[in-house]
Amino acid sequence: MKKAFTLLELVFVIIVIGILAAAIIPSTRSNPLQEAATQLLSHIRYTQHLSMVNDKFDANDANWYKKRWQIIFGSSNVASDLDTDGKIAYSIFADDSALNGNPNLSEIAKDSMNSDQYLSGGYSGTLSTKDSRANKKMNLGLSYNIDDVQLSGGCTGANTKRILFDHLGRPIEDSVKTYVSSYKSGKLLENACIITLISTNEGNISISVEPETGYAHIL
Image (tube, rainbow, N blue to C red; front, side, top):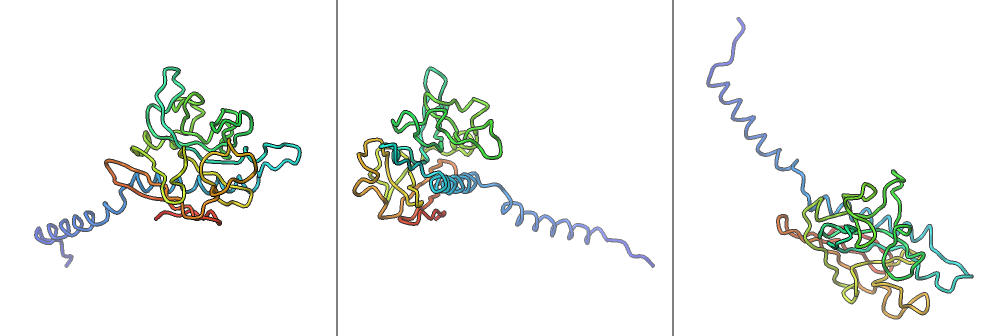
């Protein structure tokens, strides 16, 4: 004779399913802070990669070393609408033309998967986050509720929030626009650069870029 579930057994099964769901669902919930850090880590490594495969050396150009690939952070809310909506964003660029330490549109890297899109979440006076050519994910404030990005450790002395890499992939702090030679004393990282993403809602998470090797990892 086929047996059926009793009401008590059915209630028990429902309770067990509820307990399992309560345990599993929180672990699958997305963590915006972790996602932002993972994305940024990937882009730091890509910037280092560009620096090594496209090192900018030119024996006929006295300023070749000022054109190194770098990743820069910033926020703006300007009248021209070429802004980041007041949120923190970042861009990957090589200072090929103006040599002023700020990215022009022609200097920003293109997305290898979409040639119509720039690897920038927006930059003051250059590219609006609202522009379809901007990578909205690189606007950390709008996409991940990141309130600020702080640099500390080996890159504490940087005047702007950026990190560069030389042709060997070694990290350099600050802008090279004032350099009069390919290297400046004390600017090659001697201690790890700590890049901290700060979120009022989620807390903080940090990425370390190690000196000499440029190895980047989430702490």
